[in-house]
Length: 85
Image (cartoon, rainbow, N blue to C red; front, side):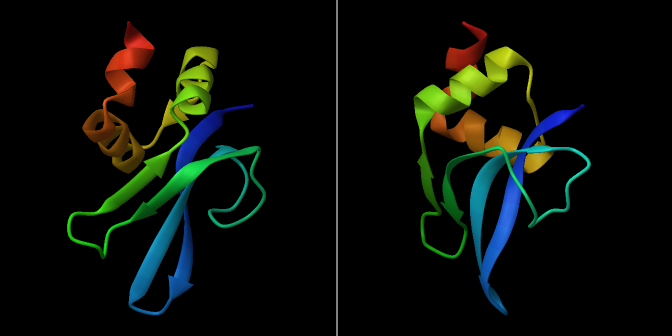
C-alpha cells in the first residue's frame, strides 16, 4: 500500500479549492482518504495555506510520499524542513 499526501479538489468550476489529504495511492483523487491535513486555496493573493503541522510531520515520518505540488506547499510553509530534522 502506497500512502500519498495529495490534493483533493473542491469548489466550483473555475474556482478551485483544495484539501490536503493522506490517501492510499489506489484511491481516486476526490475519493476516500485516511486523514485530512488542511486546506489550500490558490485563488487568494497570496495563496491561503492552512495545515495541521503536527499531523503533516507525523505522516511524513511514517513514510507518506507527498506529490510534487504538495511538496512545494510543505516547503513553502516550512514543514518539510522540520520533518527532515
